[in-house]
Each structure stands twice: as structure tokens, then as C-alpha cells.
Length: 146
Image (spheres, rainbow, N blue to C red):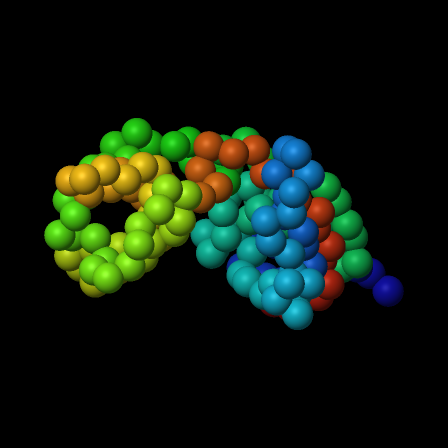
């Protein structure tokens, strides 16, 4: 039986575990209870993950290390902003380190990490929590269909 290799546009199911350089796991297919399904090479995943599955065969496993440019990008200092108290969620005690959901004018909700809190408001970091980080993935292609 000839094994198929993943090519652009194939629907793939991948078991994965993503970790940081210190070994702490930030996500895995086990956590979600099923393999991740997506169309390879179609930009549905971060670039490095997407690129890594191309050419893999069903049942093949590999470990990859992604630099920020192939994952969630570098941290953008313009995404760290001072937000006045009246624009913050009312009634909640805002503390440094917590995550908030901030609604953009276009209706999209962005996760924001509270960097610091002052009398006037809070400094929020709207960068993706994994921006600027080197990510390590263990991948296993479970199935391929075109």
C-alpha cells in the first residue's frame, strides 16, 4: 500500500502537543479530546504548523520548533495600551496578570492581559498571549483525505 503524503488542500487530522521552551504545555489535542482537523496549506493554522505537516505521511510523527515569525509573531509594543477606568469592565476587580475580553468597535472580542492597574485605569497588552515566544510542537498525522 502506498502511503499518501500531505499536500496543500488536503484535509488532515493531527494529534499535537504544543509547549514553550521551558517545557510547559500550552495546548494539546488530548486537552480537546480529539485530533485537530484542518486543511493543510490553506492558512487556517499558524504558518510554521501549517508548513510542517506538508509532506508528512499518515502515522508519521515529528517534532518542530517555531520561531515567533512562524507562529504568533513578535510582540507589538503598539498593542500595549493605557485604557481609562470607564472603558474597563465595571464591577470587576481588575488585577495585574488577569485576562479580560475587550470588545473592538467592529464587534470582534480580543483577549487582553492586564499589565498594570492605576487610579486612572489599566495598561492592557492586546498581543496574542504566545506572541514573541518560541513554540515547540510534537505532531502526528492521524489521517489524510483530499
